[in-house]
Length: 531
Ligand SMILES: Nc1ncnc2c1ncn2[C@@H]1O[C@H](COP(=O)(O)OP(=O)(O)OP(=O)(O)O)[C@@H](O)[C@H]1O
Ligand SMILES: [Mg+2]
Image (cartoon, rainbow, N blue to C red; front, side, top):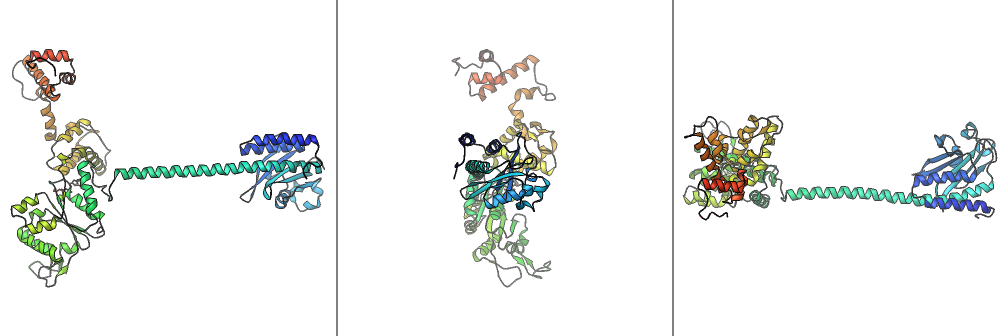
């Protein structure tokens, strides 16, 4: 069908235009080129390119003969013509639309005073992509069969190019979406694996600060015992975090919806222990005005935490042992036994084995409560956790006291690391809270307790000697300075293990100068040689 009546000149132009289309890789630009070519081919006054996307008719571009854009193109054409072409998939040509009986009903044809109109479908095989539309309002019968055929041939080529770029755009968009998705996923994965890295544990220990080697061992052990029901004995000095660990066991375990009932065995008077533990019936003794549930019953389905179990007297130990063996309690003054179902966690700051060996703790009870012993190391043995703990308590204190967070001077951190912490973490917590309250914008060494600072004064004898208000040193100024100098040199040598180069650097003098001074103070080794 193509080109039967087409003259060689038109064919050449079509080929030329085709080459231009084929070179376009960008869809919006391709549409512009098509539009220009349409005007050029048909000599129309105006041209419109319409595409059907997602079932909607869209005017993509529109040109006047002078290659300027047509504003609001959808209001400038006969919608009836566009719809007819798109629905039928066939070209439409009219010499004078205003008189064409096919458009009698079309308001726009009259309103816009449309005359010559040519519109052809943009299609690839059976698929319809849209339409091309050209018109000339001033003259009648501008387009004939020849223009119709030329435009259709051109439109068929254009449609193939449009569809190719359309598909390419779809693929690109899909790729972009996939890439974005992939990026999101891999970020997510990275976040999760980073989180996993930081907590290699099965349970949540976010309340327990400190991830040094010692605490890691403790937490890995907790991971293993939490889901079991075996009794745990937490041992450690006062203030090491024994109760915190007991709570972590309860709140991470299968009994977390039950109660956690802490009992300080050392604080209950012996006479009340039994009624406290097992409950009592109304009237069973003076003051028992009503029935009372014991601690074991309160912990039903949960955990009973026997703190300071080493303080329990032997008589009570016997009764506790019976409860653990028979899994039931008999309230004071009651006849019936009540079954108990509570996990047992005990804690002590004594060495329970030694207590047992000294016959102050029953051995049968010892073996019952210490199935899994958890040793919490003292803070002085895990100084690696101190910086994290300082930051944690400082942040918490700032929040409690509604004050801004404060910087902590490195020297202060160093002093805190060196302190022996007899009161362990509780002592550190109090120290930080106090320093936060008393310090200015920054916590410095001066804000720390004197005993912690005291360490610092001892390490600085020279400065210490010169502090105003300290006892006046004996002798003349020269003697005092000499003594101080000798002390400083001795100290520097000691701290650098006898290495003179390091000692000189410490003192801020040259090595030659240091050796001169050492000679004067009689500090040179017999051989006189540097190590
Ligand atoms: N690893 C830790 N991270 C954060 N806070 C901790 C840690 N260990 C202990 N603490 C805090 O220190 C304080 C003392 O802890 P806890 O009461 O658990 O110690 P304890 O061993 O039971 O002491 P005591 O022997 O005196 O009863 C608590 O305020 C607790 O929250
Ligand atoms: Mg405690």
